[in-house]
Each structure stands twice: as C-alpha cells, then as structure tokens.
Image (cartoon, rainbow, N blue to C red):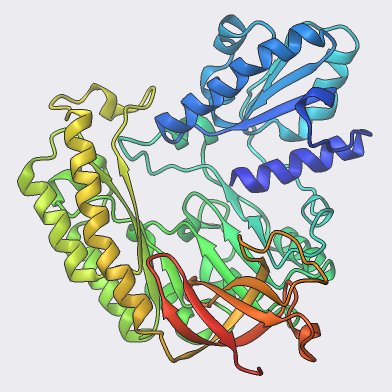
Length: 442
C-alpha cells in the first residue's frame, strides 16, 4: 500500500515541477512516507527523520514533510518532537499536497492535514507515469479497514472501508497496460470485503472484469481476510485463467483462544476448511500466511497449536512477527505480556520449521517447466554490459516463486528475455527462498 501511495506522491511532485534526485544533500524537498503497522517500522521512520536535522541546519530552506500512518497517528506530536519538520499529511491527504507545499513555500511555518475523508480522490493517470519497463504494478481498489483486530492500528490510521468504483479501477489498469505493465496486483486491507458498503460489484466479479482485459497477462491480489473468503472467490482460482495460483491468507495464530483475543472472527477449523477447499479447487495453488508470536497471554500450549497448524497446512511461505504494542489498540492494555527473549525464541522456532516446508515445496518444482514473468536483472546482475558472457535475469512463477536464470549475452533469443516477458524456464535447483533454472529455448 505504501509503494502505491509513494508513486502517487512522486507523481504530484513531478507535476509541481520537482525532479527526483539520488542525493539528500541536493534535495529542496524531502518527504518521508511512513508505516506504523510494526514498532520497528515506526522506530526506523523517526530515526531517519532525526538524521535530517543536521541537513536542515546546513540548508535552512530545505522543506521536510512527513506522511503516511505515523503522521496520521502522531499528528502535531511530530512538530513537538522534531520542530524542523515543515508539514505533516495523513493517509487521506495525499491529493492535498499541492496546497500544503504552496502554504509552506509562501511562509507558513507549520502545516498539517490529517483529516479523514469519506471518498477516495480519483486520479487514474498517476500510477502509469513511471511504469515504463515495469513488469508488475499495484492498484488500490479500496482503503481502510473495519475488522478491528485487537492488535492492529490500521483502522485508526487508514479509516473506515471505502471502495473505489469498478470503472475507475479498470481505467487505471488499462493505462498501466498501455505503458507496458503485464501483471496487476489489486490492493486493499481486506480485498474480500470490496464493494459491500457501497453496493458495488463483489470482489470475485471485479476479478472477472480485470481478467477479461485481453492485454493483461497476470492478476494477483492481497490481502485476504479468512472470515470473508467466499466460495465464489475460491472458485475464481479455478475459473479465471489470468488469476495467479497463489493466495496470501493470514492466520495469525493456531490457537482458537488467541484468535478470539485477537478478534479475528474465525476459528482454526474454519481456516483449515477453507485451505482444504482451495486445494481441492486449485490443486497447485501456493498458500502463504502471517503469524504473530507472543501475543499477550499466549501460553506454550497455544504456541504448540500454532506449530501443529503449520505442520498441518505446510505453507509455501510464512511471515512471522513478534507481537509489539501499538498505540490506541485494545491489546496494548492486555496483561500477561511475554518477554522479548521468549518472543524471539518462538519466532525463530517457527522460522526453522517453516524453512523445511518452503524447501520441500520448492524442491517439488525441480525438473518442471515454469512460466516466469521477468521482473528485471537478478541481484547479482545490477547492469547489463556488452562484455558479460551471460545475463542473469529474475522473475516469478504464477505461484509467486522467485526464479533466477542466465541467458547467453549473444543468444539469438535475447529479444525474448527482457522485463515484462513471460518465458519458459526449466527448474534445476531449489533453495530456501528461490529457484534457479535454464531457459527452455536454449
């Protein structure tokens, strides 16, 4: 979501006459788009803002702005803590940046806009302005959340659920396709509840509309809430040919007691039934998830139930987080908090268990042929040189597996291997976080 918002911010700044720079020292304006979903992310944001103080002293005319979730959460407190910041804008105020920056440039010492709005400002053009050579792009279809999980700050910093109109979403996607984008990921805090409040089409119906756009090659979405994963949405994985065979479905805990304390509104049994149905309808679907360890009151027995669930499901990938208190959320006042040492022990234990399943899932693909969407050079290949004997590319399978492969630099197939193309790769090796293979045509 922050990547999408940052692209919107960059588009606005370019329209105001600003150009990007790779150096903070040469900047006239610095905007930090922040996240507060985890304590560590918030700490990193404040640490970065703190380092800008020295630069501000050297360049008094430098304009510094703070946006995103931390800005929405802290509001005026940021001015008190960091008086050299010029303006603060919340998660609903990105479209107001031109007016905010104008106020600062015309003499206003401090400007703040953290008001929530009841509508989404539409600007379908912004997401395609820097899409050249981009294989995949995000498109936000809704904003906010009303699930109120007891540990989560999102409803307080992103506001209530608001869905965009289907026609506006399709217009934005068509502009991205015009700019060369081949894969679209639909974004929302809970995409499964898209359109319900506004009586728009359902999320499966929206997926079908996007799937029918003939020039798009792949379609993904994130994030899904298990309680709203409908039978129609599960069937979409079988019926829609462009919908990738991967779903991220956060479970958060394998204990019903903890799930109830988290206010997740489903049980382990509900979750497992949906996993079974997904795999029945789409046997090769890859499933990833989120888990929070060390939630207040999580006993060893609760933790062991989470381990049992991981072993039962055998996820393709797992994101594990140690619980941390967030401001204004109910769980911050819960008793029976666990020590950092114990949370880290449990976190590492889950990661060790999951690594075996990730390797197992990846190893199954060895000797198979996978259709890989090229996203760009691999991490080892930073730039393409005529002196290179091989060019190393990186891309993803439909099941969201990273694949790295090499192509001879003088290959007659070189035109096939460029960002945005889908190529056939025979998988030769499997690692913990990626696959390696060779182009089938070579």
